[in-house]
Image 1: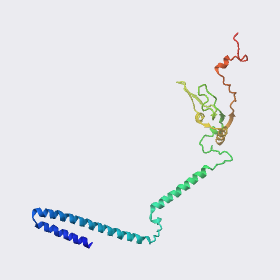
Image 2 (image 1 turned 120 degrees about the horizontal axis):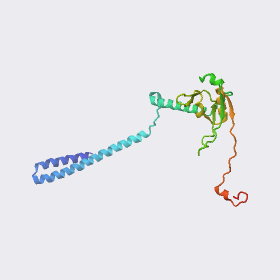
Image 3 (image 1 turned 90 degrees about the vertical axis):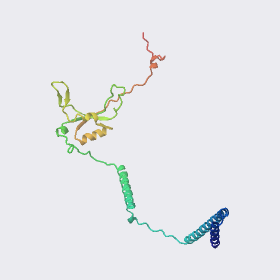
Length: 231
């Protein structure tokens, strides 16, 4: 480093001397002194960088011998961690409760009596009769659609006919149940009637033999048993 300082001083002397010479010689001495100064300054910067890197490497080697002890995290000072922890615990408890309820079957030995809290008048509980049946096939092309479920139907009562227009309607408050209330099985319909204390009877569907599917060409078969002459 001392040599570099001496070189910078010499380059400065050359630069000052070039200022007092003539124009032609001063330009050459000035260029030469600038080049020498630049080279010496670059050399000083390289020496400084090497010294800094050597000191940092020594510090790094000394720091390897030091054992770092992990400090315990104080969760009390971080409210966000506690909040997330409580939320995860609550979500896990809710999930376990759902799984437990999903696998639980409520077994009721006798059908409950809901006629007390259903707010249905007494006259529509003790005097009504319900028919449990399966709807029959209609004449449409999709006649077998939605006819596999069981339905309930009340007896007709309290018909009302308009004297002026001629159309009639029903004053029965339970007549609208017939159209939309459907059950998957016959036992479900029976339990529903027992819960509401309604007298019921079951109309079993008639079991009909389905016709054998035949093609149109079967009418013109060459079998003698099926061929019928027109004469």
